[in-house]
Amino acid sequence: MSDERIRDPRLLDRVMSADAAAGFIQPGTTVAMSGFTGSGYPKAVPQALAHRIEQAQAQGDRFQISLLTGASTAPELDGALAKVDGLALRLPFQSDPDARKRINDGTLEYIDVHLSHVAQHAWFGFYGEIDTAVIEVSAIREDGSLVPSTSVGNNKTWLDLAKKVIIEVNDWQPAGVDGMHDIYYGTALPPHRRPVPLVKPDDRIGETALRCDPAKIVAVVRTHGPDRNSPFNPADETSQRIAMHLVEFLKHEVKAGRLPPNLLPLQSGVGNIPNAVLAGLAASGFRNLTAFTEVIQDGMLDLLREGIISSASCTGFALSPEANERFKRDIDFYRQRIIMRTQEISNHPELIRRLGCIGMNGMVEADLYGNVNSTHIMGTRIQNGIGGSGDFARNGYLSTFLSPSTAKGGSISSIVPMVSHVDHTEHDVSIIVTEQGVADLRGLSPKQRARQVIDHCAHPDFRDALEDYFQRASRDSYGKHTPHLLPEALSWHQRWLDTGSMLK
Image (cartoon, rainbow, N blue to C red; front, top):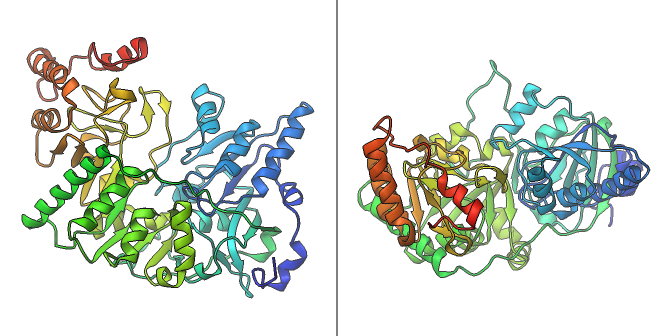
């Protein structure tokens, strides 16, 4: 790597190997690292740290850290540290199989946090002192400011709060990303907060690089490594039907005058169903759309290229290898249309409410009354985490949750009498969509919601059983406002655990 990526001469004498840099991280400390959904995370230092931990533990020395990031990362970070039992605590989101196994085995403590809360909770001191920050950047400018790479996440907060900073300068990341970021330094702690001066998704209110006191930077590591670029599966029939139902619903809302012709700013979770929804929006003639979201994935990148989305605000990317190559090739085009913000702005509840975002997120299950579980299988086994879905569900103009009506080959119903874990209460859920149809829960009482959910979202194999439960609960429950038969409410989940199927 040439010094074109490290242009501050004050830092050249701190360039060292990943192994040497990892030596600054001590057991029992809290370490904050960059990264958001597999983009912009450090790639060399975590692996070197994992090797150091493995050596220490082989000699009988316990070596674990507490790890904070923006969201999920990748095998080189979460996976490497989890495999060597190097994590005592993890927050705020994860998707790594090794970390997930340890969390569900009870050997790794995990705190599932709304993504909008993480930076401010760190500033409040809720997580204790942050000893070291390990941050990937695409370049260091002459003045020492840091150009982020393909995510911003909580990097601003980590750089401000950490006692020591390790920088990975990754020249795999395109130099053209410089200028795409918008780092807002106007946040403050209560009671000194002021309104955030952002009124449109494409407003720029900050700086294009991160600040960091050079005296805190103890190591600079040169790297050349790709983000976690996982390919997306082509949209299957179920995903296409879910997308069709949601797109038809949005067209109906436009016709009814509740949405403008170009909708409102879109927020989209990551996965095949959101990609299918974005493709459906394009095919249905929507134009001049905008996005105020956390992550840009393949579908949104395509709509930007086609001019269907005019601008998109995010905090990170989740691109397939093919889409990443298109992004790098056409980065001058995308730099004029994509703004990458800090996580505390991309997920800011007040901004989400003021802009009127349309939230589109996946779920594990929903119950008759509109409560949604987006994190736990059978109520106890964490899958990934709540991520930013709660930020957009509670505060958006519309909160939509999308899922196939069944899972595990039809043995599990995604519509159940009572969810086994609540992430989004019935008060925060507007629309539920499965391949069966759309349940519009707005302005309905609990029993009216149940009618919508059963009739429009339940799979036919489970519809009669849900109807039977609802009718008996409406007759026999202790109260009739939100009818439940408590001995039976979670019996479907127990039946699956006992027999491998929710069906009787």
